[in-house]
Image 1 (cartoon, protein in one colour):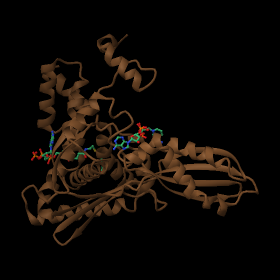
Image 2 (cartoon, rainbow, N blue to C red; image 1 turned 90 degrees about the vertical axis):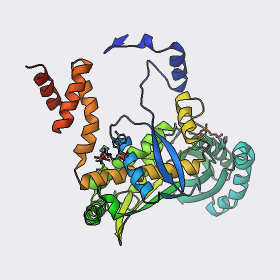
Image 3 (cartoon, rainbow, N blue to C red; image 1 turned 180 degrees about the horizontal axis):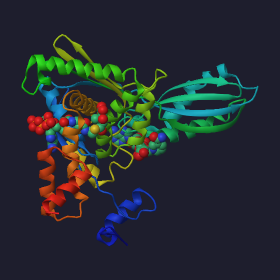
Image 4 (cartoon, protein in one colour; image 1 turned 180 degrees about the vertical axis):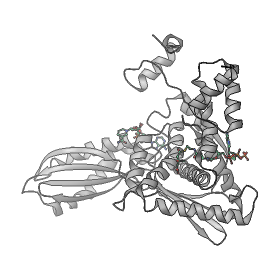
Length: 394
Ligand SMILES: CC(C)(COP(=O)([O-])OP(=O)([O-])OC[C@H]1O[C@@H](n2cnc3c(N)ncnc32)[C@H](O)[C@@H]1OP(=O)([O-])[O-])[C@@H](O)C(=O)NCCC(=O)NCCSC(=O)C[C@@](C)(O)CC(=O)[O-]
Ligand SMILES: NC(=O)C1=CN([C@@H]2O[C@H](COP(=O)(O)OP(=O)(O)OC[C@H]3O[C@@H](n4cnc5c(N)ncnc54)[C@H](O)[C@@H]3O)[C@@H](O)[C@H]2O)C=CC1
């Protein structure tokens, strides 16, 4: 098969076979770049953080944000890895007693933890069970500490084990479902305090104060206007997804939880806040980051192992803290760009490298067109086509 100059025969058979074990109906491969942040100061330690994204300027923005944060003393991040939720919904008859059922919870927890001893060995396990009844349905919530893993598969196994046991309780007629919930959990917070002079390229205090004011106002708008909040959060997810992709984590699960968390008040809100205190701009983000450093496809993928080689030995809590810090850096860079030159200047300058690639032109012509786009500050497809015509004297 030949599509746009790419022959599937060019993909080594061994690579295709490996990919076919990761998913289904595999016919090829899609490549992403692996980037590395080099100046990330988080909790007093200098980290190298892998990022993977198809979007130009996301890594540059994270780099920019992290280098400003480093000058400000770095990011302080904390994580609460309490566990992830699982749900069991049971159909019950009139013979069922919720109070009697709850009395059995310590025994259910003990049995599950005896069955799933490998998780206990890693420091995790089933921590808690709670339940409520609505008519003939009983809603159970389980809290599972997945240790260093994301925990979806283990949690599902524990839930199915529990549901089977619970069928023996008087009045339990049937199991409706037993599956983990992606409801926000594993909350991680990252904070920075940036002297406002750092917001000016020249280190000018008055200019820095103006930028800080605009950034704080922009953030305030995100705390009440959903149109702005969702865009602000997209900028945050630029960083989160890039670290999730690079480290083999389930970005869909994290995305779903982050947006549920953004809507926890009943209205969709910004996930971050930026406020002025004296001569400092204070930034903060809290994100539900159910991620892991083992499990899933993490260990089986050589491309993902590159990222762990960059990170070095790392705990899941630390990876969550780095992810929230990158998210805050991306958010900072976007707000600072919007509050000063606008997003196009920085983003489109980098995105234009993609635009020139679509031109039916030689490599030399593409390079010349790119230079014309940068020097004249015109980054769109039409501008690129016009520059090509100009170059060819048409
Ligand atoms: C793009 C910059 C960083 C330019 O920033 P700049 O100040 O115009 O350019 P600079 O050349 O002076 O670079 C400043 C720093 O940026 C980094 N940097 C600069 N270029 C590179 C590069 N090629 N590779 C790696 N790092 C780079 C690097 O840290 C550099 O410092 P230095 O190392 O020179 O001391 C800035 O304009 C920026 O951060 N813009 C925001 C870009 C962005 O957020 N892109 C995402 C796409 S837009 C989006 O998805 C959502 C959004 C933005 O709408 C969300 C929202 O509205 O909130
Ligand atoms: N709704 C969702 O979010 C769902 C997600 N998934 C997928 O599940 C996958 C993640 O599942 P996991 O349960 O995390 O993976 P997994 O099934 O490979 O399990 C991780 C294993 O790691 C073990 N472990 C924990 N800490 C350890 C440590 N320190 N050292 C060695 N082993 C340790 C656990 O005991 C567990 O057996 C992801 O690929 C995700 O896409 C699957 C179903 C639903």
